[in-house]
Image (cartoon, rainbow, N blue to C red; front, top):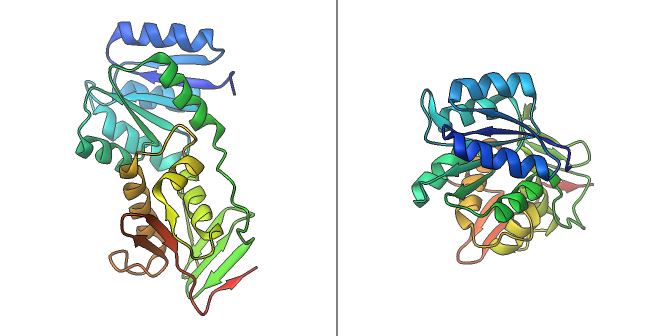
Length: 235
């Protein structure tokens, strides 16, 4: 997707100029915004395939802009910020970001992250059924649909790919690194905080009691697994 459209949101003009030059030379179409409000306007008008979003901006700020974008769209959002504490990263992922890159960063690293997000190609999920049904839960993998208690549940592409990979392993524990590399890409593996946030989102959406999950279980020091219940049907 070298011709993809990318919206660059940053209040520093020199950063916007640098990123525009690098991205356009790589074949991307680029538009810019300097505030959260302007970002939302450009988001609706430019219809980007990916957003590079700074957190520290005048106006509503990056986190609120991220929440607004995610509320109505599944396109990839990469946060760019000088904040590198784990709580800041978790806060950004909770707001709907797909990835998080700390400033200063190398442009080759950023380009690799952009390519990984635009590919949206999960790792092998051989063994995954076409559909599973259990008490109150139905997952249609072919049509990427989830229903809980007869209500349609919206999952982001990352959430759905994470769920599919867990189910494909047939109740076996899946290590953190395998999940990260399968869903985010081969350059990932140590970002376990990403998994914590996305697993938490999944549990809130499909579990009757997210604090006592019966489907998505934690395997301490290893990873996660999808529990196969006695009443579950796999097709």
